[in-house]
Length: 245
Image 1 (tube, rainbow, N blue to C red):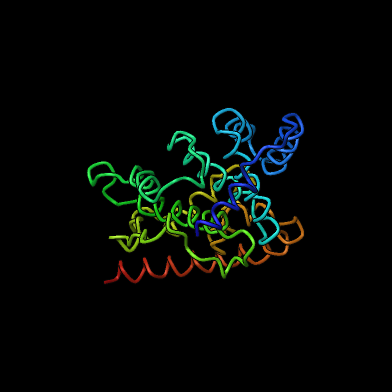
Image 2 (image 1 turned 30 degrees about the vertical axis):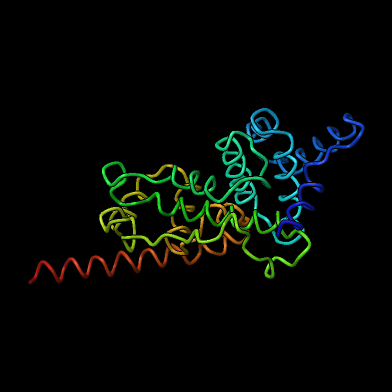
């Protein structure tokens, strides 16, 4: 592992003899990984993160684009997580970070039961841990296939945490059929009514619905209103049976 770590340091931290050329290449890589994201992502990488760590983050994101179909949401989350880790450890080089420092960062995500009684922080903790695990696997073993990369010592024995609750949501947090019909009745915008109907019927994520084309939405809407009417009819029959009992 020592030999691998040395190689990674030379690959991602070594500056060119011509500083201007190095900065040009580094800025170009940062431009590529932040393209299409909010400007503060670029500003954070170039102003708050050390140049060495910023280049390593850029190299990792570019490698992920080659290895996987990287979404903009996960790209943004990965950059923010690694940037925050770098600042939290005072911009210490990633390759020189210790397991204790990584645990120190992850422990900062913990919340007391008074502040977070539903333990939502556990989901954030597990997500950040997964991002860091993938990153450090790549950092120490960049030449191997993603599935064959071993967990380095810096991430050893840092398991995922189990949720204490099966779900952080209560039944009262969810809309009923009556709530849906009330919203669809008084919502003034067809676009919003269509979005709500599709989200309720398909349970798709917002970004999946927003990527739909008009032709697909048009075909769907022909059936959605019939489905809503059936739901309303079943709900009315259920209310009628309750009143008779």
